[in-house]
Length: 354
Image 1 (cartoon, rainbow, N blue to C red):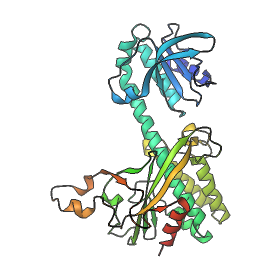
Image 2: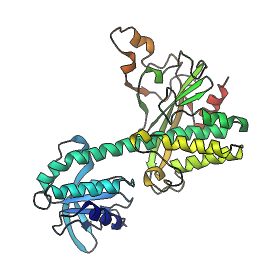
Image 3: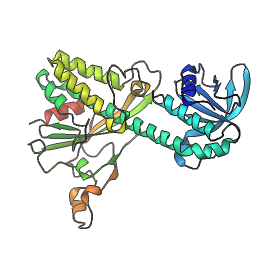
Image 4: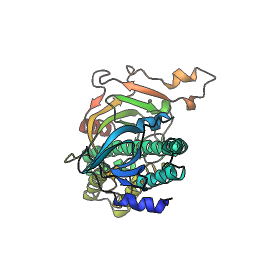
């Protein structure tokens, strides 16, 4: 049976497809059941040749398609295609999945082998979802930070950088001397977000870092993934923009190092994390986005109908800290709310500083 290392080496040699409809499939064994290729975006694909597989779990069902695979100068074949994202560590995951399929007897009974391997595939898919959410979240927070740095006076840039707390577990993504900001980023078309407690939708009544919160904004950002776009927004580009602003306004190397450390800590508890420079080419972080909307909601507006602390606290038998919910904010709440556009949002937040 093929070893993990030999499959890993095979994956490294698999070329990226030059067209959307044709694949250069490399078979893991001579049985030609488990094969590997890369799509035009560099995503690893695991092909399982044979009859259609019906996964048990919804996550795996969504990730697998049964299709005819076309090859240049070779016969086509029917296969179940599992696509994995273009993250560096997913080459290892693909190798592990292939090795497990073969260990479970895929060359002689694909259906049985797949049933035994499906739990591992599900874990890999869930891992991707977490990684993707972290990249989207980091991109949104850096978008706002870059806009704030650009809009701030030179003397304010250090304070703005220091206000970013979203890189760690904290009650606010930004705490600017009494102005609280929570950033929610989505790849959807509306300002629909999951909220982890009422504190994320209302002003803190207690002091934060020794100051009372006199303003609170929920910033809702929409991103659309793009491929092959000339000037997409991505994590490395945003970090470079912020670093440039820091250096031109007199930030020393210790401040720069602290900022880069904070960026690397975002999502690190889930095993993701972005190290600028060494991970700049990583497709996960180099993936480009376009901004579809950029809104700041003044959550003190009574026209915003969301759960508040007083709505939950009257229920004596409910733990207020356990209440999570989803919000769906309209594009227009009231006159001037939300504030629309990155520059306008940054201006409003900076203008609210005491």
